Length: 282
Ligand SMILES: [Zn+2]
Ligand SMILES: [Zn+2]
Image (tube, protein in one colour):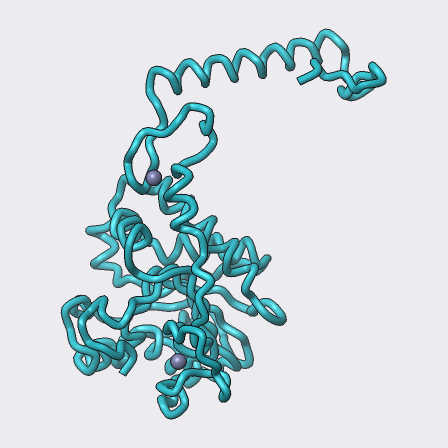
């Protein structure tokens, strides 16, 4: 810190800025820093993931260093069609063996991480009302990793997996919409959050077996009457993909509406043993 002077002694401040005002601003910023440091000493910041206090030196961070590292994008090799981990094995046909004959309407899946460990914990927390800051922080990490993995031209439309209005009344958060908004900003595509509609109330998928999940969501989604997806590349965003039944159904409906391409991006992909079904997608 050299008090706003370069080595040559020339001020770094704008030449048009009155010197007294510049000094005030400088002292104002210093007082703000001192005030913030004092507050951090009295009320140390708490990591939004592990809820442990962490040093006041990292005041700007919302996550401690360990959690921040654990929640970064997972770089393991995944099948680009279903997002399942495939290890180091080669994908000669461009997708895993399970996807070759699946006939899935999804063209590509981007995955930030696996649904276990700290990522699973934060996703459960993000669904609660008082964790909006955590949702914003995770949306930022998600959107950044999505943009860095994205190949080719950006999508034409960014949409979120919808929640039925009755469920929205009992839950203030809509995690998929928050993720879609931030992803749209990062990809420079204005998100169309209300593009997809949930046309009826569906049972909770969590404890259903894969076949029951598919029956549960069949015909349960529609496209808003104000938007056409014909010929468009649609990016559909959700927080978790487990069997893929919901996202398959949405992609199938979008293809029926003549969407050219459907890409899915999820914060977390369920692992094979997450729901105890072995192969999740089928
Ligand atoms: Zn932490
Ligand atoms: Zn696959």
